[in-house]
Image (cartoon, rainbow, N blue to C red; front, side, top):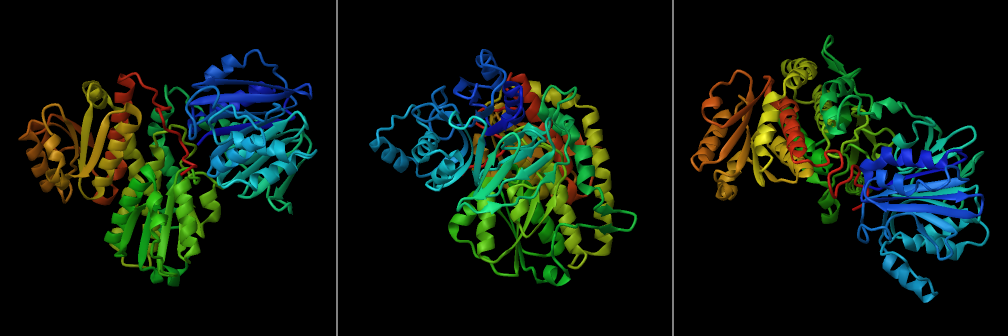
Length: 610
């Protein structure tokens, strides 16, 4: 959460910083700010509430060129959304400016100590203590002052610092919140995510926890918090700026829904070998004995990734006969989980690879000696670097806050992992081949769904006034019900809940009347007859039923109020298709309500704080 960008040695400093913020705005958009050292002695700045476009207007009078600069787009943690709490924050003399992503857990104690020294605070934020700490420790060396300051902090941080004391120097430090250093011939840039720097360079250093970087336009040094000089690995980013542009689509979310056929092809490319009937995964570091030794698989994730993990639980239990669990990462590490060395495999799934709760849960499993495997989209993210082994989804950059193509890519990656392990477990060659063949056809089937969205758009218009919705599913489609409800909540602000269809009778049925839209995922599968009974129970209470079912199933049209069709596919892969109309439905309802689809209120793309 929160977007950070900084630069030294770039002529048009203001434009670079604002452009970088726009590319990071999915990380937070409560407020934004910019600070630049001008003429080596003036710290010019501007702040605004709302989107980066407001900051662009507010900062119009600032000089375009600065010696060094930092900028920030905020997702509020401590303190309300106002100009005073917007970053950057400054020391008392306004000679030091700081932007920060994370949480200073001991900020109250630090604030009390600083106030005893006579410091007057101008904001309610935890971040301001960092600026005053740096000023306290500054004795002619900005990098040293930052190093000493962050050693006093408990919690998480990714910070960038500039000062009129050293006008050609950019300092950054990381502990738990991602930062990447971009390297140029005569400039250096810092950002909380790669998209902000792609226009300038693809040569980067991913900072690790406990590292501080000092950059000038000509050089950079990386130190540990105990002042040990480090030699970081410079890597080349395999991404292009045009991959994060919307093209002809009005919103990133819609573009990313339509990206799914290609993103799934990328997830499977080079891994799925239908001609030889094989699955090749280079990431998992397990031999045959390791795979056979696994007695339990624990899938740990948050939000959309948790819903994908629930599908994986069903896959692994049905086809590998391995007891499996799907756990909320935010709860997992706080209950002292039982982890058996060598016998338990924990799979951590995160689009960004930076999700704070998932990262913390992964570290807990490592401490207990469990095997760890990550499923991530972002290359060289924290989870990808720290797990024992992993799988990249290769879905491409996802900008829309409401995740879509990441979900289907994660489910696909988990299916590939199941198949890969199944070769030495209990998966029959017949079923193995059948799943491979079906997976190969999924991209075309999603394309078929996306060719004509007329019915979804018409249904969305009817649902615009809705205040509450229920989503019901069974088996592999219960997690899809959860995901469909989550999408509706995230971007349309309609209260929506997902349930196993049979659980409706244990409480939610009390809510059903003619004003309650109920989405029932009812493909022609082994639970279809049971789901039909649930639909009849809803109709008996005058509920408005929307069914997602298999093409060719004419029975439901005479029973429910509206039907959305998806192509036929084997039961375990149905979520890859049934989720698509639900993604579109949420999108068009939000559009009909006049809401900000890509920037829903109170949400940010990467949840890097607990």
